[in-house]
Image 1 (cartoon, rainbow, N blue to C red):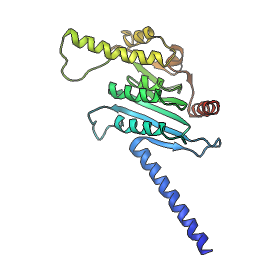
Image 2 (cartoon, rainbow, N blue to C red):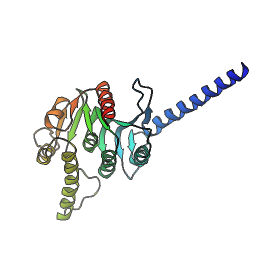
Image 3 (tube, rainbow, N blue to C red):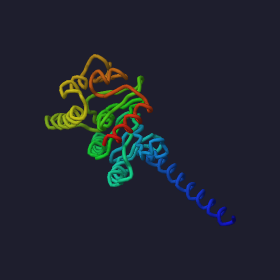
Length: 236
């Protein structure tokens, strides 16, 4: 009897340590593994929130997704045969272009089924991130903003500078059109729209509008996103 109690305590302690590690992982990286579902599937959850941080650290008060944390985790995920799918939750204002595209390319190259869900919003470089998965959802009140590339700091007014801007925008437009149902020229039209934003170029789309434009596959929430991911895993 004493041995059984001791074994029970050890099992409980081991589970508490696992839960503590998962909680710490969620706090540090916005990631955890979902494995308590009825279908007995192991799903990795990645949340992309706040601003996508690039090579420079943001303020400690700012919510941020650090690409130098996310990329190694995605590489580890691809190498883990026990994980069967990835669910990406997005509520981001955008951020560093290179960092965002790096994460988007990594997600797009994963061999497992992937699904994204746009919640509050997925703006700017969040658009390529939202369409990088095999299938995408947006909640009815979710928003997506498509606008030209912005630069901070000193910008040299030379033709080479504008050519560089065009090159960056072409990378973004190409990725979006390749990984969604919207054509390159249509994304560019949304990006350069002068009628919606009073002090800027671009377009804001809400819920169903993103589906009609071909950016997102379907309007839905977490229930629909998980069901779709389970179905994709079953068919894989």
